[in-house]
Every structure is written in C-alpha cells, then in structure tokens.
Image 1 (cartoon, rainbow, N blue to C red):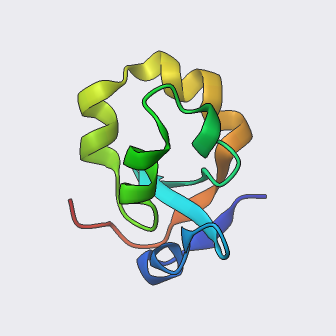
Image 2: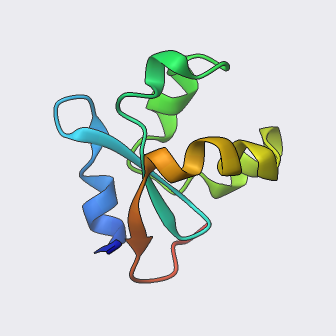
Image 3: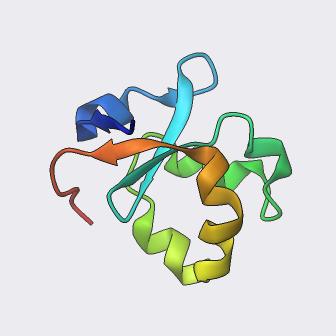
Length: 84
C-alpha cells in the first residue's frame, strides 16, 4: 500500500538525518540512499531534497529513468497538487 504525504511532510525530509524525499509528478521518492549513485552527482539532489523536483527531473531525464529507478525509490504519493 502506498503512503500518502502532504507537501509539508516531504519538505521535512530535506537532509540525510531526516531522509531525503523529492516529488516528481505527484509521486514521492526517497533518494537518501540514491544520492551517491546519481550519475549527475549528489549536489543537485541535495538542492532539490524536500521539494517538488518535477520540472528539474524532466528537463534532464526521460521516462526510462523513472521506469528503472522509480519502483525501488517510490515511497508514496502527494495528497495535494504541488506547486511547480
């Protein structure tokens, strides 16, 4: 069962101590353990942690990236529509 998060819940997960979550297309992903694997480097993920990263994600990635990593990183979805 998928957990439901508010935007405020996700915003509280913005560093390694609380876990790092991002929103992409209303889905919530836990990127805490993916930071060091990210081909684009950890810095960019740290910058968007706790936020809606949809715009940035689709600027640099295609659908295949979500299909590959999404299932293992997705932890739930956002209750309300996030602001882009």
